[in-house]
Each structure stands twice: as structure tokens, then as C-alpha cells.
Length: 128
Image 1 (cartoon, rainbow, N blue to C red):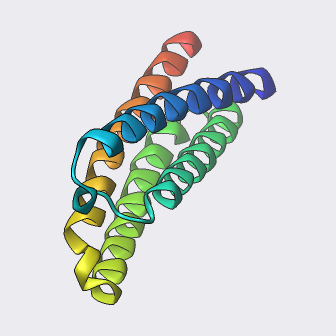
Image 2 (tube, rainbow, N blue to C red):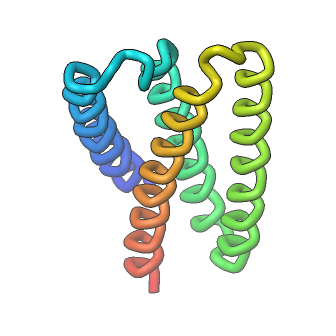
């Protein structure tokens, strides 16, 4: 489990670095009002949530594989509620930055969700 988690962490950091470089390049070519000042914090947030979710998934799989599907569905639901709560709270508190924040958050949500699901599918195929 430890080597699988370390491998995932390495891939996640490389993936996040690539996304960060793309965001930095876009920052220089697009108007500033397209970017939220909290973009680096959004990256950190998604990295931490993805790591925690994957770590808990690995622990559940090694305890009982049957619980894997239940945990995956529950974690997806909890993350979705957490993401919506953060979006609503931030937009409520920072109306001027609402559109760039929501757009950045949604784009990173798509990328990190795709990354996590592909990692989970790869790992579940190894177990079968």
C-alpha cells in the first residue's frame, strides 16, 4: 500500500506541476481578469483532497474489497458537497472574483477528477 501511495503521490505532483505550468503560460497570454488571485490555493486544495481520498481508498481496499464501491460512491458524494460548499461560500464572500474563481475551480475539478478516476481504475485492475 505504501509503494502504491508513493507512486500516486509522485504522479499527482507531476500532473499538478504540468497543470501549473500550463496555468502560468496562460497567465502571460490571457488578460488578468481571467485569473483568480487564489488559483495557487485552489491547486493546493485539489492536491490535498485528491491525496486524502486516494489514501482512504487504498486503506478500504486492503481491509475489504467489497467496501470499495461503497466508499468510492460515498467519497465522491462528500467531495461534491465539499466542492459546492466552497464554491458557494467563496462566491458569496467575493462577488467580484466569482466568475474567474468558479471557472478555475471547475476546470481543475474536471482535471483532478479525471486523474483520480484513471488512477483508481488502474489500481482496481491490478487487484483483479
